[in-house]
Image 1 (cartoon, rainbow, N blue to C red):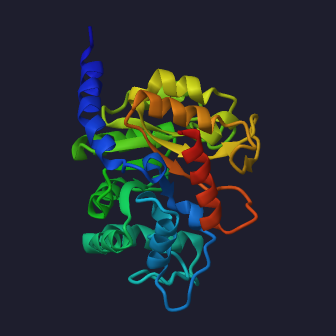
Image 2: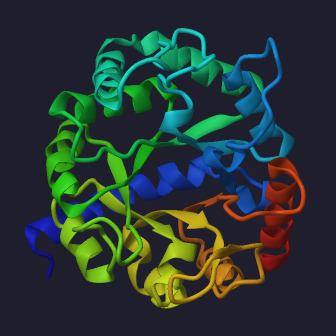
Length: 305
């Protein structure tokens, strides 16, 4: 028998599964996408808007969807983005206040335009990585859902603490939008979702909460990613794919660390679970970000053959 919360979670899972499955394109390395923070080091071209550079970098990797990292499209000091404020001469406190004002005042059309520019490059924004922290006002948390909808994202991914997750929960319920929570590494921020138990406590806060499992960080914390995916696949919306050594080890090229990327991808494919995966390039590779992401995608493609 299901209790009311379990029944609600099962019902939402039934609704979300075909939606997530439909958004995972056929082919293209099993429908894998890319986390756009992978391209933070991509060289900007004079006269070319960074948004177009970012969209083109994703497209150059041969994928068709991405997890968009919010700081790459938000106001930044010294930013060259169209419509952004320039805040280079301000103190950190002043910059934080200006960023809050920007989030609350920027029109939805700004985000719709970004979505259109990604679409022009053949890329769908399937997830919006928006991670509130304790400094966020309730209005900023709420605004993230409007941003995600304007971008065309079907869900939000968020690296948050348990305390912040409690604040996000009523907004997720109000907007009826899935928020996939990503944990932090042990020893990091207090109350981070750094263990399976803390993640479970966060999931209980809203029927719209799911897990965004970072396989690399999970491995670095000495947890078994394969077992967790097998046991909790109904609660997992997305996978962040990267390789790390155990015991808070460094990020490494895929196949050189301890993260069971191959085994997790094969399990998800074999069971046909509607879990979307995003490549994150987060190591010091010998070539540029685009070429390194392509290597990761080739590794994933071989793993799922």
